[in-house]
Image 1 (cartoon, rainbow, N blue to C red):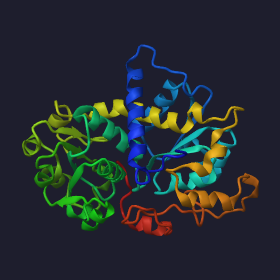
Image 2 (cartoon, rainbow, N blue to C red):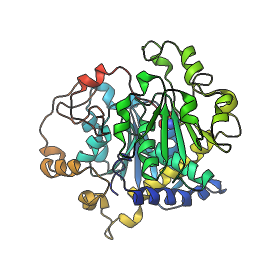
Image 3 (tube, rainbow, N blue to C red):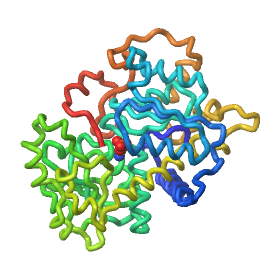
Image 4 (cartoon, helix red, strand yellow):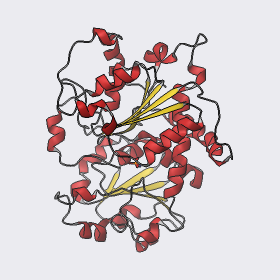
Length: 385
Ligand code: CP
């Protein structure tokens, strides 16, 4: 695997391999000396254009526990704020020979864009309304750890399904591993055509109780306070009453049901504190497992075994061999050439996105369309978790 851009492209074997590798890394974080030399001499750059507590920190900790050098760049400290394009930023970072670039961006397709142009491995740490693959992997690891398996489980996902990259990646992953999925949320946030997204089908329930009925796993999604002025539901208070998870809801779930939330949480809105801090909540286990998952991802993408004997970066050699990489990305690479100097000038918008770049919107089938960003602007909310 060359990049981790999304769950949609992964096979069941690749997902299982990632989870098994993460499982083997769990133990390292419990040791007194939480460090192994697996990625000594490798460099990981965290390039975050959106706020993050969990994902950015756990990628940094993961890199350091594997002895890699970790560098963190946020939009406020990067030259994107001076008008540099995303691609120029990435090319300049790449000129410093990182092995892996982890990117979070508000535009769907930003990681794919870098994967086409960079030799380093690219990891998607959340792109617009598209995917958040490491969140889905850490959720799956947490479920597997508690339940022993994923196949046959009934999973309920509650909240803003439409704009959630966490929901999208989780639905792909859990469906591939044999779980059945029900979703519930305000009708404006759970469109019926969403079921078409997943080949296996997703059951859409009008009420939270229907989705939670006999559920083994309940995943609650965040509602953004900043969307309060949007008309997706009348008020936060109303949302909390109808779609917030309260103790009485859990009586509909399986007796040993677990509750998860990707964070950050809005206590008292989408989840009550009684549940968030209660015995069924695995919210902090998710965060713990996130470090192991990110260690596994970095290890498998930038790992020593993939490096050639003479020390050249394996990424130069295996660019076209990735089973998980986007075929169009490989095509793009062939036509572009590899030298930054032979790429022509590109026009760009104010936020650093080049004209003609593939950053776009998420189509119903889960792919990223090449439509221009105007459509993204017209679909009101930005994604978050
Ligand atoms: N779950 C998640 O992505 O959290 P952060 O936004 O804090 O990274």
